[in-house]
Image (tube, rainbow, N blue to C red; front, side, top):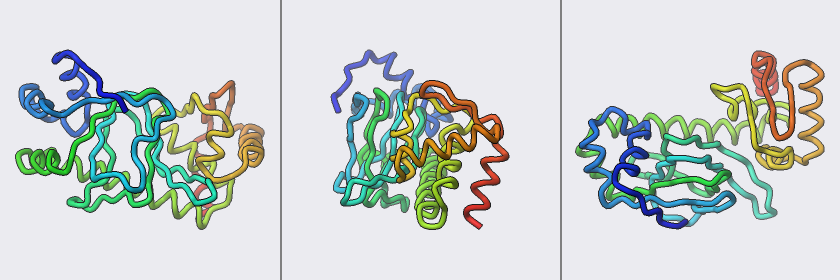
Length: 229
């Protein structure tokens, strides 16, 4: 990652978009951001690995894929992180990323807070501490769900679950090839495409170039629940 030089007003604007800081007055956000660098990560940059330091990342723009990778190169996507939220490893609040990697899947702007930074923030701002715990607990549940699906669900169920997670709140997934998404659920591209075609035939999806729109969310949710039963 490369450090990004920003004017004070621009940096403040980015920090104010973070969900964990939205309850703080602007002057407190300004005091917090001093001394914390902002970095850019180009699309495809892996900026966190299994042996990385204990860091809390703030994703200010772009998108990040959190995944685990086997020794033979197979990968399982644990979460797609959207801008405005946090992710990372913080043992002091019970959030571990053991074996987890993080890669920018779009050009991204990221801030990394050390354990010392986070401890100070949580001590001085209890409301922020609660928000961090809430967000990271949700992220941990996403990880558990993804690992459970890999063990107990078939490809159809994993594809349905991935689409629901990635299209949360919008019902549209854009910018990914079938090969990209197949790697996220640990299957071959041909298998992924076959599942997508079946969902299209049942009117659950409409597709375009690197675009999938969910038209029947209930159908996908039913598939996920049946495959996990």
